[in-house]
Length: 199
Image (tube, rainbow, N blue to C red; front, side, top):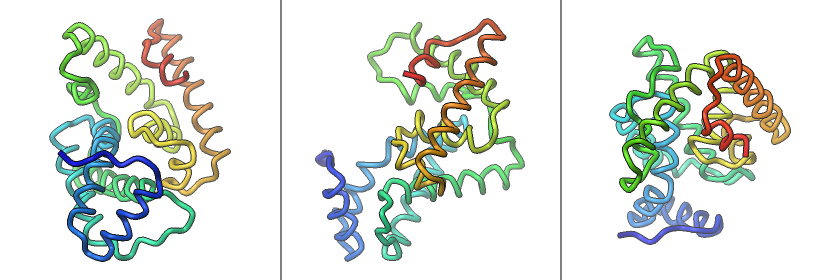
């Protein structure tokens, strides 16, 4: 199994080596970012199968275009998430689907095998409730919440991926979570997961 990559400077070194054609650096970048990208794509599409295909395509695009990547004060992860976002937009355009669909069990991908079945069911129901409530948010609010909580990006990384300033991301997140809370409270259904998102 490949070693985990930690600090950003190690990612920078891997990107530089990958740009020079080093195959092991591509593999390490893939391992470092696969789970984050997959969770984000799975949350957005609601389909683990489609998420696998799209996530795979993200890394194909990474290999094809990493030589054009330039450090401009943005983390490498933001560049990958922008690729993922564009592929998701293409996916929904081609399929003629709405951008918010039921999770259909993809909550399993967010949980380890040791979690009991009841907890998985509770999580899946909570995610479905949050997904439905997210239909009332703006597109940018949905994107920020998806990247921050499904993708695990920081405020700064989300800002770079979306092309907004950090303060704008914080405002979108705050407004989006507030509206989610109001919607779910009105339905008398405030999943524990929402408390975790706001924590």
